[in-house]
Image 1 (cartoon, rainbow, N blue to C red):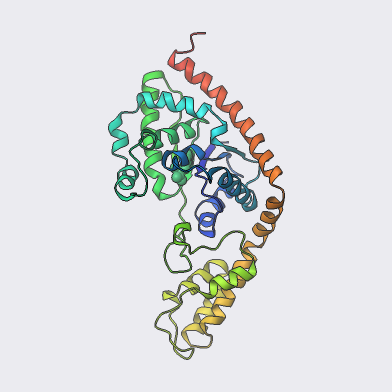
Image 2 (cartoon, helix red, strand yellow; image 1 turned 60 degrees about the vertical axis):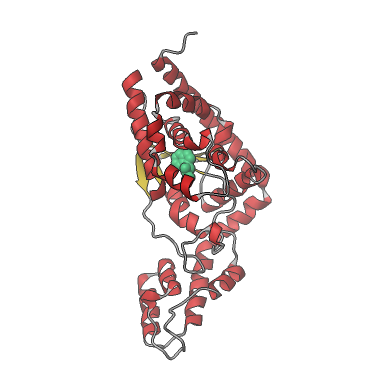
Length: 328
Ligand code: TRP
């Protein structure tokens, strides 16, 4: 089986957009690949070094959501980056062969240096962010890296580091490919992209009551003032989202009723809320279980970490021998 590696920075609780955009795909990939999924807490430190107070709680909250979403410790290795110090050692070797110019040219680096003003990102670790990511990926000789569009440049840089490393020391690492998750960006409650920083999310743990209340606030077709006005489901966030969670013929029927003013927006919202609640029910149920059994979550992470370390240690041995720095 080919190998997959992916990670997420510990941002805390995940929302429906995180699930549709990444997690759902991770769950599916477990059946066709040998998967290594980890919490990238060192990556959080590259920018959030000044205030570390949330990191530990965020690691647990995110791992809890992963398990609720269906990541399965029987199938995948699920672990915490900072508990596998082997990543740091490989990062050192990769740092040695990575020209500074490559890092300064990474688009996400330039963009964030310009746009983020509330923290000082002139630190060494922030520039090295993609080198650490390359070490994460190569630590397990991954063939594929499931990521969103925003991370493609990092996987591309990983390939360049691998080429340069292999050139110096022989063929140690495969060149990994990004596995693009092509899901449409989920809109949030306010019509912008669903994002924690916009405070417009549906969370994985929202039960039917919360979902109904949140969906009630969503914006529908702005040109439809009265129920008797014909609606335009193609311009309506509620209608479009509803289509994602019901069968096509059901959505078609609702669209038709909306265009002909046979149903109002309130009814469509109720239908969306019902569909979402049903869709999320198994996740919410597992979430309740794991929130009540945090020790189990912790044990799963520790057991996964042990498996990761065994593999990482083996590969590091190979790396040191290839580099001829294993003098002992
Ligand atoms: N940089 C990724 C993100 O922000 C997280 C990450 C760290 C990662 N290491 C990784 C993703 C290795 C894939 C593989 O989303």
